[in-house]
Image (cartoon, rainbow, N blue to C red; front, top):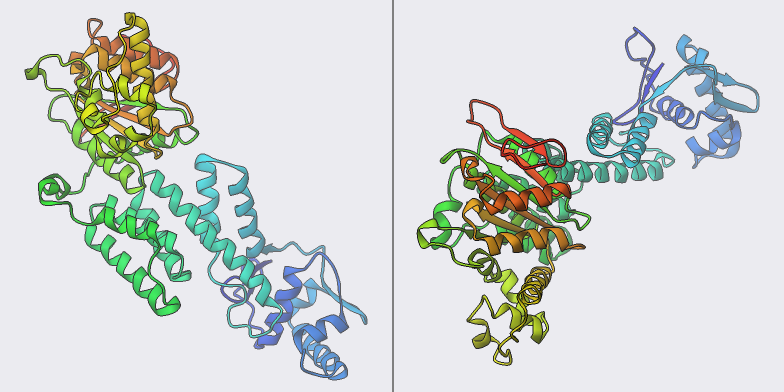
Length: 478
């Protein structure tokens, strides 16, 4: 026996068409008994529940007539236990109830993670075909209807978040559109929708989503969108002219699996353990474009992004890439929060810093190892001072100077309690035993902090592997 209460009442026996009860009150009665089929219910209570405005005598007479009507249909007669005092769902009758299926899926989602959680949430929202006993005007379903509806909208939001984190924007958008239709005052749903459309390169729909949100809030509540929503809107607006060339490139296509690998690495930093992703591939294959597209996606979630690129034609500039990271607006703003001693250490590689912070004095001359440790620690603290999740792009990292590579190793190894991901690009032929990058990768690989993402031509498949077991094709232990 299958009973559907979500979206309206339906009772179906195996192999048969849905039973036509020809009475909304009969559907209400059977719906209540199916939902509470763990016990028998006094006739007096059922009568008062279904006819609250009638006298007790009239209500009991109405119930007696209703039971006579529904029991004339064989399937119903077989599933109800009716006595002079009580009515209940017969315990020996197997029953598949969609409400129980929905709530069971939600419990599985709470108790699992990863793909199992995603599967459970998808099943839950598929089962929810509408509100409890849609069309029933009785009062008894209202509290349960509200509770189940709230659980459904929360499930939609969690599903949308998981799918966005996996870079499956198309599926996320489908569920988030359903969410804003069900709960049009939920600002967080509009923010996620803007993020999803923007990640797909559809800026126009992302902007339109914000204006729909603003109109609904103004019409229904007389308020404007929150600061978080306005910030999400600003993130999808067209870039300034100087930056527009890259921002208006076509949406990245053909790298869905690579984007999912990057998203998994980003999620792995949620608990404050920094990581490095090394994107490798032949020149022109799209390493930099993939890294920048991922960084823009992270920025849309509220992350700070800083980019450094090595230029071999300029020769080796000690700490050059590190200085570029420190000069990015979000990290630069944190200079003021450092101690004078830390600011003095940064002045070793940022000669403009004393002009901006006049109280900074020349750092003391120290033995080489101690001076190096103090500088590395000051850089680490400057990154931490950004107080937001951080993505550091290291483009053509195989050309980074040894000092910058050592700083990179230090901050990924030592920074805890900060959500940090370094996304680096490199040509595989440039990474060998003679390159200091190999030592850095081996050290972080031994700590399980590296993911290698090897790009193949689009007609082929990419290779991605978690460092921590085996030997990479570059020769360093992973």
